[in-house]
Image 1: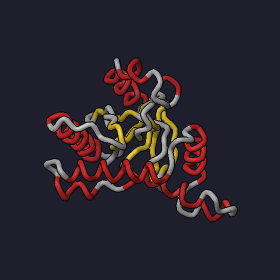
Image 2: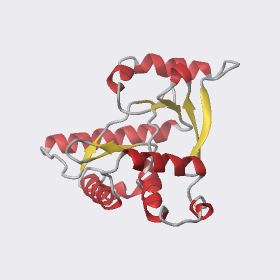
Image 3: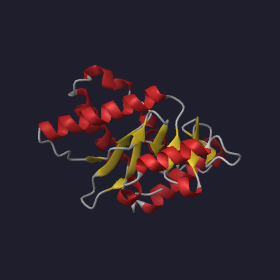
Image 4: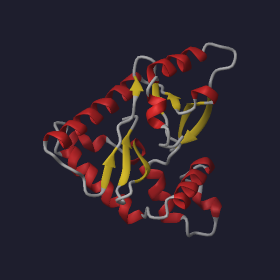
Length: 197
């Protein structure tokens, strides 16, 4: 699910989240299972597209807390990041539902960039499953301006900002699979989001 129409989808996020959660008890749950970064996730299908069911309330709550603190830090200090644009992800910890983007994690994308020139595809999927590999490949083809160097610059700046918030050194617990790469702005900034911390 891309960013187009995101505002429209988020207008009734709570209602859609509740409908997805309720569908889990029906004969035909509104989700399908997939694997990303060696983690099994359940993503919404049909009318529930653009949502995902998470396993633990705590991981959603922590991600929302990090988002809020980072947003406040950037706003209070009038900081306009040079290399990234921060995108806040909507979630409902009580229902274990989070907004879902069909986009690669930072870890997957960096790995893809580092091995995509290797001819033996079987080697590539040792650390990246087939679905994640093709997601990264599709993303790279659609975002020609995004390079490994630009992604690394954006990650470094994001981590610097996180380390300057009230979380300080605890920001190090954010691993590359907790950062989504959503695309880039017209100015060439990399769009990043924090999930499942």
